[in-house]
Amino acid sequence: MLPFLQLKRISEWDEGTIGLLFINGMPTCFTLEPNDLENAQNVSSIPAQQYTVTRHQSPKFGETFHVNDVPDRSSVLFHSGNEERHTHGCILVGQTLMLDDDGNCYGIGNSKAAFHKFMQLMKDENVFRLSITEVP
Image (cartoon, rainbow, N blue to C red; front, side):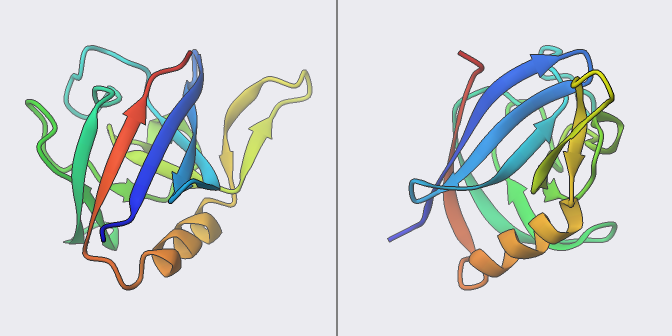
């Protein structure tokens, strides 16, 4: 049986969209995506729907996962990064939220550790289902 991942987008602000990633119902990490810019290549989050995701060898990011069949898009990956400018239209994972002195979120922290943990959790998987839901 394929693992089921759910990305629940929980907050959108000028610096991107924060979400929580659940694996088989268990919260695993934060996510960061660009804001919704009508699915524009490399600068927008992808439409909220269900996707099949496959293991992928990226020239830039190494072993990762590719989100398949995103309408009018290619190369949507999971990878590490801390701020919206690092997303390139992809899904970043992190362990913490990065807050400024006023308590405003500007990104996600410990991304490399979160990505390593994510890949460890998915080490035996080549394919999984991903459901993305919008900010309530």
